[in-house]
Amino acid sequence: MTAPIGRILVIEDNEDLAFGLRNNLEIEGYGVELATDGQLGLARAREVQPDLIVLDLMLPSLDGYRVLRELRQDGNTVPVVILTARTEEADKVRGFRLGADDYVTKPFGILELIARVEAVMRRSGVAARPAHTIRFGDVTIDAATRTVRKRDHAVALTPMEFDLLLALVKRQGAVASRLDLLKEVWGHASTVLTRTVDTHVAELRRKLEDDPSQPQHILTSRKAGYRLEQNERSR
Image 1 (cartoon, helix red, strand yellow):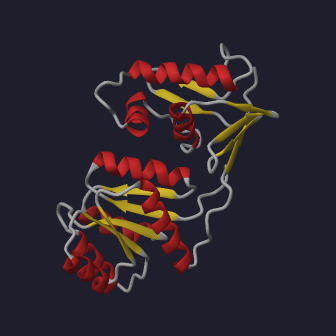
Image 2 (image 1 turned 45 degrees about the horizontal axis):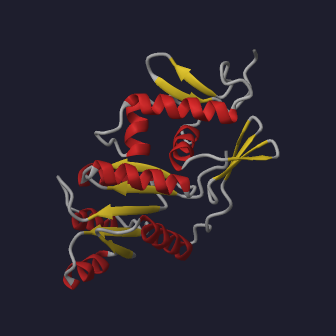
């Protein structure tokens, strides 16, 4: 798997929105870390030194304005894209005066946010997104075009199957619980059952494994969840 093209810290207290942002930014090839309040976000920004911060203005413990002010007073010049539900011009001006690089007003489309992130990344000198190709066994995934090939043949995956596959790939072998996958891929909708994950995993194995009954890559961790093994296991 290719290395992340940039590290992004998302500071957002809305859990569903935060997970959605992480999922979509990781699909684009970025490494993403989440913080759910301003105090934690400020601490993580100082520790991990991200290439860009996506910062909500309305945060518990420490609002986004104060986070931004503290960072700039530290001499930290990390690019910051602010998220705000406010439409007043004065709020945006205040953000810019504190050192924000761009803003997106809620509600926003994910494609708009990604475009803003890429533009700020380019201006800050972080390389533009390359073709993001992932391989395991004889399977090749192109995240940019959302296509999958097994050997020389295209494999048709549903949107949910593709997102589930990427959710497993990005963990680099770590176990993902069913609840984590439900939250990340399906938005943890109350109408979705954990059995849905099992059904979609079975379909991925049917389409991508040589022998779905003895999978070599999409593996079950008993009582824990699923993980992706990128290296061929001995039989």
